[in-house]
Image 1 (cartoon, rainbow, N blue to C red):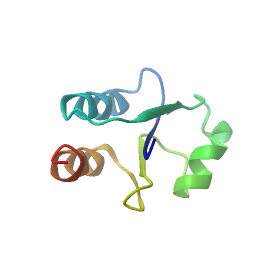
Image 2 (cartoon, helix red, strand yellow):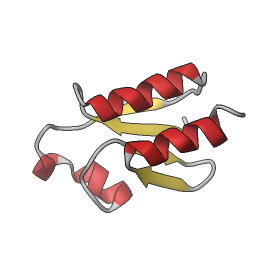
Image 3 (cartoon, one colour):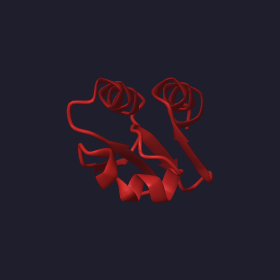
Length: 81
């Protein structure tokens, strides 16, 4: 899977991104992260920070955080393909 979303269960920003990916019929995999920031080593490894959501698009070489940026990327790039 070339699209991975790092998300926290119950995170409203993560849910918005999930909804946008589903609405855009984008195939993706979700990596659920720990609630404690100090436990989010995988998120830190891929994005340089521990906040979620984080979207990784391996095919296009894109890693991004901030839900508004991700939503725009999904709408303009992923949902269009």
